[in-house]
Amino acid sequence: MFETIHYQVTSAIATIVLNRPEKLNALNERMTHEMLEAFNQAAQDEHVRVIVLTGAGRGFSAGQDLEDLQHRSDDVSIGDHLRRGYNALVLLMRTIEKPVITAINGVAAGAGMSIALAGDFRLASDRASFIQAFIRIGLIPDSGSTWLLPRLIGPTRALELMTTGDRLSAADALAWGLVNRVIPAEEFEATVAAWARRLAEAPTRALGLTKRAFNQALTSTLAEALEVEAVLQDVAGATADSREGVQAFLEKRAPVFTGR
Ligand code: T3D
Image (cartoon, rainbow, N blue to C red; front, side):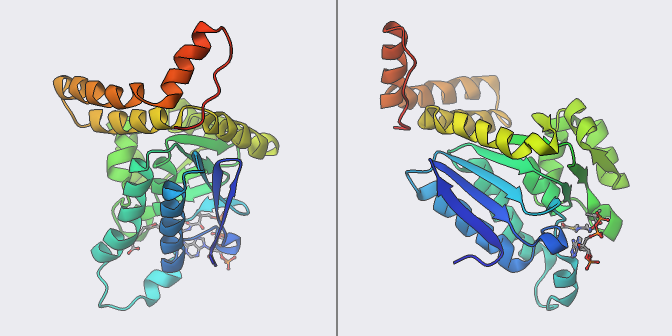
């Protein structure tokens, strides 16, 4: 039973809602571990074909709960706290072989921004904004921001955001390539649901293998990427969904993918 998040699976879509709206879903120890548990559950559940992460209330997440940080025992180093919590979570989100949508309903700050960036598809409400808040409290970017942000928007803009802690609007986030879409707040829920449905009806194994090949290619040579493609295409080509895709094309009908 979760206390700080809601977790629900409907029609092959697992939805994780961060649920401390009075604190803009600031992340305490419990919430981080519940998120880890929920993502693991969704990864292992064969009925789940897409995962949506969003926030309750007017925030996506304001990052580390600073009251928690202040009251933390001196025996726990920040590094160890990151390793056990955010690092594990961000790695899991990036390596789960199912699509992850981060539905950024409001402000995403500090580790909350890093987690928003870790989604495969980043859909932002027009009320969303992004803050590399770490510098405002004398810390460096963590939870993957140093890796993710320059890859998404380029080094010039990434370093500016990291060192100023300035707020980036949803419109600028779209123009800079940080998010896939910006959606009017009134249409946000329905649009996210439509994206999730579309992904839930796609060939899940091929999506997962695409994610693996894509992530590996970010740090590999062309020769290595070509070999990874060849190896993973053997796996994709042997799936029932691939057979169905080819058959449906030849029969001039829409394919029905089952995720197998
Ligand atoms: O070991 C480790 O864990 C280190 C890891 C660090 C990773 C990090 O994430 S570091 C960055 C931590 N986050 C921040 O520094 C952001 C702090 N929050 C803000 O700067 C602002 O709240 C926002 C710019 C995000 C939003 O501003 P605004 O004006 O829309 O809302 P607000 O009034 O500031 O916040 C609403 C409430 O949420 C408020 O509580 P109150 O006064 O109504 O009782 C505020 O205190 C609370 N809140 C917001 N962010 C946090 C928070 N409470 C605890 N921790 C927060 N991060």
